Length: 470
Image 1 (cartoon, rainbow, N blue to C red):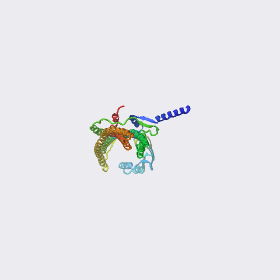
Image 2: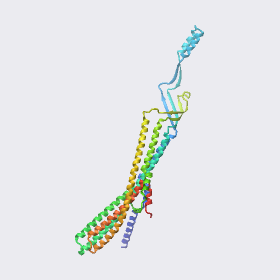
Image 3: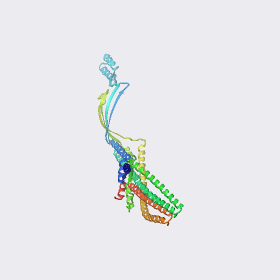
Image 4: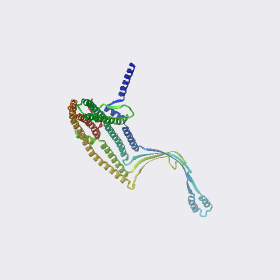
């Protein structure tokens, strides 16, 4: 008997320890740290920054000289040689001899025989081999390299702004999931309280029916509402499980078996900063506006690059032959250094079209920036109004909850004394649960709207400053 009792105690302790191990208390700051460490969307955004940096380095490569090595083996159908007939030399000599000796025949005959031949000078054989090293350094490109460098820097800044926007969006999801889980757990608590209250009421109804103080219909009405409260409790627990899974996925903890227990409570501030401060912040820190400004800056640089097409390119070049077979150095020098330019005088109006296209892109981005400012102003008004509405709702619901709790207490007491009906007690319990859930929802809406407003202003990190200090 003692052995079985000891075994029962050990099993009970093991059950409670396993339940403790299966739960992970997590504050909002800790969940934010986990989000920054393991979130997949943030990792993708970090890779985008690395890609932008690589693109910037690629654009900066235009500042450096290019060095190339070329080689070739050439087989020609004929040799390269110079053929020179000797008659052009012997004919003047014959004229000179005739001027001295008019009747000369012997010397003239010899010169005619010599002039009938052709002198051949070989320059290169049929098979040629060469290996060369050539270099080119652009000294002036019409400002293209300066503009390309500016574009590369702007692309990195644009990637960083995009990464910050992704981080803000993920923090919005974190607030929705983290405080959504907190809300779901508290709703489960409210539903449990309501179910336990209606269960207690049903037990009292059984006793009163046995005593003849209420009829069967009153007892059945209490039972139906108790079952309805049980279904509401089960639905709240299922909703909690769904939000629990969503938070695990967001924090990249989907492979763990332990459930997350949020320790940071739902909160609401007594007062809010003036809306004008949020208007100023959104105009200076909004991610969309910053991205449009950077894109407009890139478009301006592209206009300058297109306009630089009207200017010549000046470059310093050099060539060194490392190995040559079949080509004499007196015909083709081994080393050459020089400076040259290329100037595109006409390209079928391609430059004009590029300039116009870049200007249209810049104008479109300017219009998009103006529209974004108007949309953001509306967004700030909407979110700020939601915050004020949530505060007003909580103030009104606090008084309603106090009255509802008192009404439940009075009607329960009256029901046990036969002075109130079962319907009145159930109505009071249901109204109390509804008001409590509405107040919790108002807190949740406040927290989510606050995070969305701060993200809209580009300052999501300030959310922790609004949280109550422990």
